[in-house]
Image (tube, rainbow, N blue to C red; front, side, top):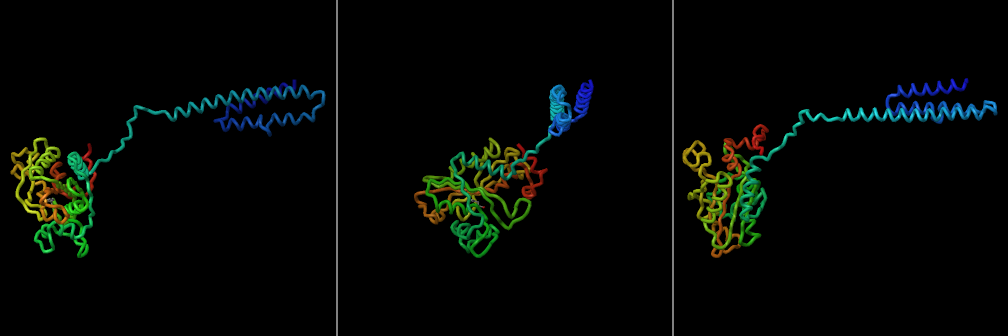
Length: 342
Ligand code: PHE
């Protein structure tokens, strides 16, 4: 009878403590207090020695009964705690799909990069290959080989940043024409994008800007081929009804040389502030490759002819997007740049 009371007390105490335990860690500690190696049940078994031998079997049976009951109760308590913990976890990790999402700001390509990529697409589609020359050039490639010797007045057309007697920051991607023709034989179709530098600074000029150079050399290449390609370029870049117009001009490395106008995409040629009432906008310089330039590169000008063109990428971006100050393209104000998202 006495043992019976002890048994009930222990089981009850264990149940109460297990109930109070918050979380599986605390429950484990309670369980160890009763069933662990240094726990209450073990301590009871150790008492066996003090008990009269004839009472030992029944005592042992009772202790075993307590242990079995405790084991069952703790298993049930553990299951309960696990269930509760899982429910809490699910609750805390639940996702409210009606909450407004966190917006991830998407970047955009710079207008100069966009125009450059478009130009590359247009001309790569016509079979041009890309060539990039160095930004630090020597006098020979930037001027002399382009039929612009040291005393040539055309050197004044471009205010050059000289690094030394011999080296300079290239003023034009035309320098790449020479490098390419030294390495390749006709047929040649080369497109050369890159940075160029001139000591020039106002609303439409910047000391660093980008050009896109084109060069075609083959048998029977004519000025008509040049205009045909530029028409295609103008239609893709500006508007499907764009036309081009060639005006006589002068560059030492082309003969004849032309200034290429594109019909104004803003007014369709009627005349507006963008085209200053003329209906035409000057877009690039071009011409038939001067025979001296072909000779300088070891190409026979009696067998081959070619044309070249060079355009300012900033200028095209400004015309296309209606940007009135070139500085906007280098300030990198996000309020400006954000307007060029797709
Ligand atoms: N290099 C010339 C310039 O920078 C442009 C040009 C290129 C003209 C190719 C004719 C042929 O002004």
